[in-house]
Length: 170
Length: 294
Image 1 (cartoon, helix red, strand yellow):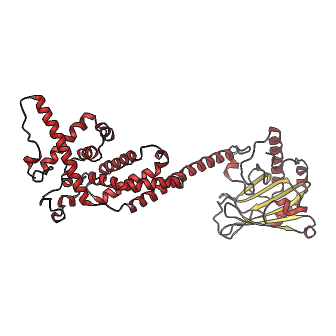
Image 2 (cartoon, chains in turn blue, yellow; image 1 turned 90 degrees about the vertical axis):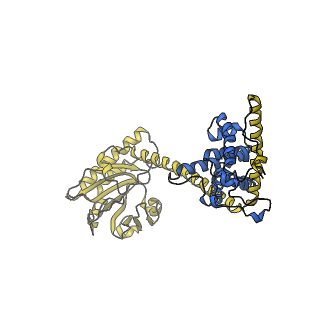
Image 3 (tube, helix red, strand yellow; image 1 turned 180 degrees about the vertical axis):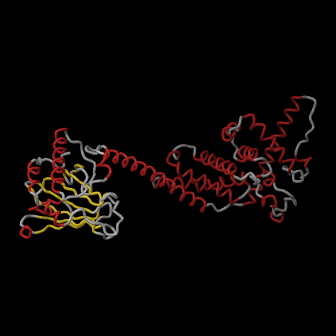
């Protein structure tokens, strides 16, 4: 990669890293792991940059790599682990003093998100956080469109059930 | 933030269409609520510094690109090396299994450009004659049959091995190519001192003609362990340059493990072989365009 390519990559990475990391965090529930996933995605993007820099696909490529890294990492984990659930996240509570409008909740939405199955969580994150179409999410996750279409609302309903004492709409 | 205020209830009306519309509305409302709430919560997490992540990713990506490029280069080199080895293995004269068993110690086995059939035949015949003369000049002992070869740098060559019953313990080789020791350095085409690919140190000296009565050069070969491995004598024979080398084992890095191996010949025996007039008829048949023409 020449200096121009390196500059292009750095600029893209600098502007995209934060959003990628947020997406990764919503998938895995752990900021450290999210940073690792972001790094993996950007590293692979660097290797492929010459091929994709002149397309309008860098964002899609990075998100795809991030998602694959997350799913691959989960597959490699021991079956004795509780994949996708960060134990500290379950104990995490937002600081009520930080926002007087937030009630003294027992669980945040992100905590509840971690209680979804990894695939449902991926559907929710990709559909409602990344705003991908049903077709795009289906293609990314290797699911049928109808499965994605039904999984999204079902997952949201489960979130609502989990957060009964802390409703989504306030 | 009561739930009944936030989300439409799950009650279902009797009318299917109305129910579907209501469900759809609830889904949309749920999505919007989810997005708002998620944005709020993520905003609470603030912005994480990503400069280090980006720098690490670029660094590791750069390394992967370099490793990948290195792998490609290594693969190409490996293919070339295998191809070169195959070419060497198919050199004329290598079909003799005896020859393959013990490499010629003094003749570099390099890729040789294809020669026309007549030149190859002439070289093979001349090399056989070298071997015949060499075998006739050797002192008594258990010597192998002569093996012959050719390389542009050293010319045609013949080699015999002495076996003491426990394996090869000595090698004598002779090579012949055009050259005149009157211009000693030019004829030898090599530095006075050099180390070959097996770590052997070659020390070549041009001796003044008046000292020996004729132009002579000597070559001493020392192993990486400091043990003396071989001695060679260069003589002008007609228009050719003859080199006779006697070694205490193959000079291909597989040195004998004995503490102080004996040379195949004494210096006296080696000098007598090199000065033999029996080389002259062979040297006279050496074609002028013999070396380097493939």
